[in-house]
Length: 181
Ligand SMILES: [Fe+2]
Image 1 (cartoon, protein in one colour):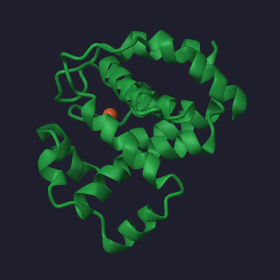
Image 2 (cartoon, rainbow, N blue to C red):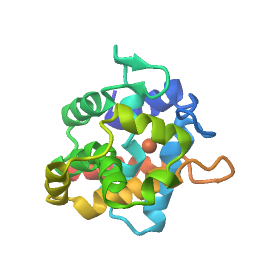
Image 3 (spheres, helix red, strand yellow):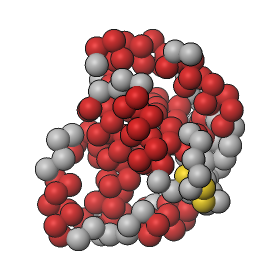
Image 4 (cartoon, rainbow, N blue to C red):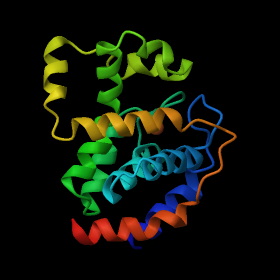
């Protein structure tokens, strides 16, 4: 199976599951995040990172939690992406999206209130607010700005009424960035 076939297969099997506590499915959530990246003129790698940012939730894992799916989905996801030849930047973008939430909660007073109820609950399971040392470390993240952009698209991608292009739209981009990685 090629990587694009595998992505299609993962979404065919798990894509119709609800995106935890929200009114959209996993597939809709991924497609909306990717569509926002395209609208923002993000480069191909960042678009694919937006598309695949929660792919860890669709991968088989033992650590299942009813509310937020695979608890260590971050690590599972990094391993999956690495094994398929995705670039270090794409992996850093995907794995940075949970830290970005913790960072924004810590550094922007209003941010916590803007999170959906589920996202506020899962925040604690994800480590809660950052310490000052963690904040400083996060600000040196190689792709700091892009990770924050990805986080914003992630949060917007929970709109049950939004219509966006389908998964097949992104397959050539996945092939392209894998060829370049
Ligand atoms: Fe997400």
